[in-house]
Image (cartoon, rainbow, N blue to C red; front, side, top):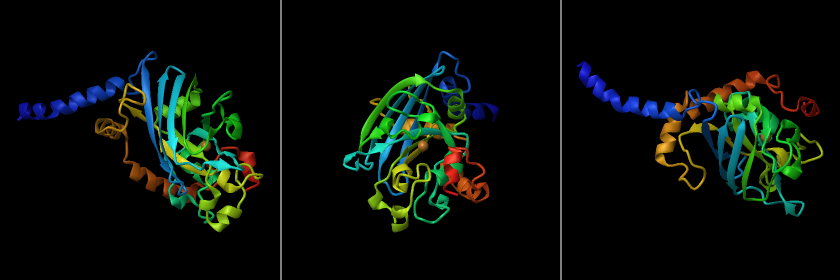
Length: 265
Ligand SMILES: [Cu+2]
């Protein structure tokens, strides 16, 4: 009886050992941990993307491929500001997050799900939250590939390791919004339309067993399986939990650019 159990569990233990050897919890300072997020469309953007982060100590190399985003804004390549959001539920908002019912999940409305800006995935210069709304350093156009190595701040690293870091790419095509959404001003920058700053892509970063960056067959069955095994709860469960918490959380949980939100309240 005992022997049989041991045999049955042997493969599981091997899997667990494999998982732990490259996992966050047991990683030594010099080790590299890889995190991956599959970016899903929000607000009907029909965009898609993937983000990989190789983290060694506080040095992060972020690689990102996105496509299907809004292409132009005022006749120029559309600037898509993008961030790693932290310190909240670590999930992407569901349509239930649209508190004011205008058909658009604004950045503020998504806050209880993904939290404040921890890191700006800027194309140059500052990577802190202070660069969060600088359109000049956003990703540009419908599709782009991004790669940058920088020193990641401690707050973002902590959320990353806790599974609470969420990549959000902003900027919608106004034509795809409801009439109310098209008429509304941005909750972040009132001089801009709501579409300009609202989330278009979102994905939670999870520790990946992949050692390699893109080109190394991202999203293979093995990777997905191991990533799921590491998660404490199913993504679906987390989404529903976030939806329920939203109504209670209100604006109180939101610390992202608080004074700029004041105008929108
Ligand atoms: Cu953001």
